[in-house]
Image (cartoon, rainbow, N blue to C red; front, side):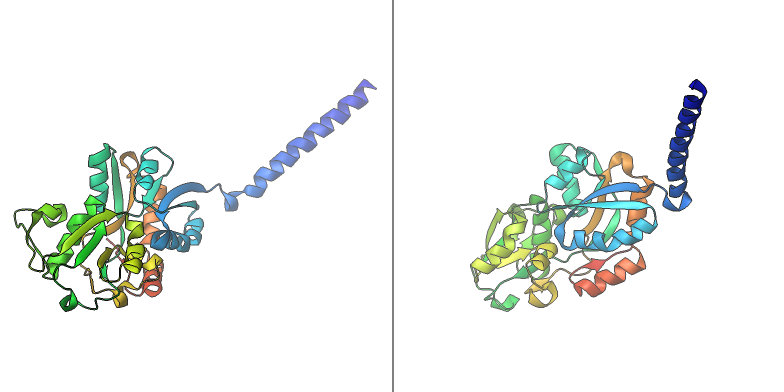
Amino acid sequence: MKRIWTLILTNALITVLAACGGNNNDNGDNNEESTRVVIGASSVPHAEILEKAQPLLEEEGIELVIEQYEDYVLPNDDLANGTLDANYFQHIPYLEQTNEDTGYDLTHIGGIHIEPMGAFSQNIASIDDIPDGAEIVLSNSVAEHGRVLGLLQAEGLITLDDSVEVQAATLDDIVDNPKELEFSPDYEPAFLPEIYESEPDTVVIINGNYAIQAGLNPVEDSIFLEGEESVYVNILAVNEEDTDNEALQTVLDVLRSEEIQEWIEEKYDGAVIPVSE
């Protein structure tokens, strides 16, 4: 009887081991475990672009998880604290300002696209129609002020102190304001389209992603628009120790691939401009 029970137990153990071994073999080389990468992104266009890239990354063995954000602060907080592996929503001046303000050690591994910033108004159709004393609404993001002021200067509406680098300019650096424009830098970037809707006589400077999200076409609906030469390229931001991370480099390569770049051009019709370097 003891021999019979021994044989039964032995056969059962072999069956269990065989089953486990069969599962491992089923995974095989064709089903290798993928690398999971978590990236935080603004919903439009960043998350949309990442969603387009997901199947291409899956082919490269990367499972891309996209966490969407509707503000400009939390994505860097979550990158710094390790919740995210990378984020995709910001340009270099904003990242540098964040590091200065917080002490974070964040960097980037490359640029992906430019979202031209534009001026929008319901009742003002052109630069010549902007009346004296008009209100110019811009975001409360100080890192964006130099960009906005540089845009206004390029259109001849103001002059900045030439001793100050345009990217670092503030409202205090305006030395000539012939139309006596009034500036309201009091609003979160995401709320600017609402100001555009509720204050038809104002000029609202809106980031490209929020304009698109609100149903505006920056190319067609803006009074004037930032040019393609903008230095405010949107980047894939990472922690300093991850600059050589192979999976993140693969993500960047896919986002810069011809397939994704062509899709961006077709999808956003000039409101988002892809870059390859």
